[in-house]
Image 1: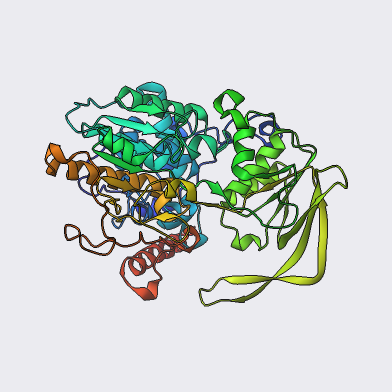
Image 2: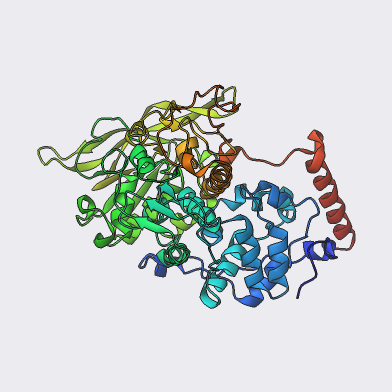
Length: 544
């Protein structure tokens, strides 16, 4: 067994800084464009051990502080290093309900790996935390299986609306606390954006299926194809005996361009394109089972990871020319650099500083012919420090296209929010909820994840689901059973109910804005910078 992590392990940090990063085996681009399998092939036990050994076991644990879930990363990597990968997976599961997913899709370079001391100042590759998280949880699933805790159903029943990351996390935590949980979702299969928004080459459906099987084994019930405002009503759920309802329906409505030609046949929003591209028709709603023919030329508009998913899916669908248009430079792109490199390797052409003006149609044919774009240039930074863009005079150009995919972001579905009578919201149909509890303006109704913040991360949604589940359990345990259902009057959002001050859920900063403290700001940032500089100076003196 590894040395206990209750005390800091003794390691030679200078020697560890000299260890090289372990190569990450991937499918060659020429092969992977012909399948939908994941790109990263995974570490074997020895490669994982060597990579985990690069962890400095920092006393300040900046990687944990940067993780929205607060994963004890050093403890998990210590177990991998000492040949206990299943124990490492259990460490991740102490704070995360979806470590096998987060290891694949979280932007680690802006979170845990971006704060890794080994990679400070760009002098070395950070420890590959995400790939190690994937390694140990995959191995656990393949050997011992995802742990299924024994659950005694002693609590009041709870309904969860939305089977995405926030809903799944809330459902698991509530089930662990003894509550019978029923999850309602608008899609035919559970998973939400994890299944219907993320292609299989990034997140294998088998990984998600195993998680759903674990939740079913815990007694969680899934009810598919139920949509708020159509055949699902929160007040009716409460009247039917659910003691509480958690709203975790996310922010999955796609943004439109609102330019000429947006509604031409062959112009698709990202979600419609992705679900039809990477799932079999039997897993889709009836209105989305029509075969997807993209033609030879595809243009994708947008700059984030969803746009990357779309261009890479288009390649796999057989498109000969795929153009990715983004109105700023690569430095401003919000998505992962790794995904952009994958796209380049697979043959995607990226047009930076290119903004769409209109979608062109074939005269008299009623279908897409191309996109007219304006060449842009960066302007001076605004008060927030972000540089704007402006068109270059005479810089218009056209890219031919048979299909145009709009991947310019998502927002909360206004119809879903409006269907919950008495629910307080703010601009953008975002649900107002208490940050630490998920309590909304309606007693017994809680919310979390993207429905309360707008589009964010899988990890932030999981964290919100966990917090809300804890509050639901505590509230129900404290309330007389006779109060577990009913239709109480809505809460006032600014005081006046049980001494709780209600306000809009604060928006976290964009992921790209996350950074470590600078040395001159003092605190942990200064200590870490001084420590790493001392270590590197010592290594240099030794001739390295």
